[in-house]
Length: 74
View 1: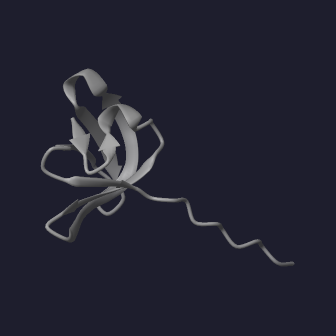
View 2: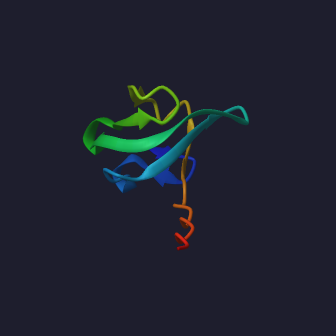
């Protein structure tokens, strides 16, 4: 099943994703587990620190690009 251009099978453990619904951000976090055969995946929610099972049919799933971290200065 396709979730707004991202197939559940395309997600990998460690991916950073955002889950949107009706133009509002509902969840953001790191993918913890993926079961492509069942169209299920879990994230570690960045806001709550809890594990969440997401429904890719009800949400628009987007990959989040890692932001470059600033270099430390001495």
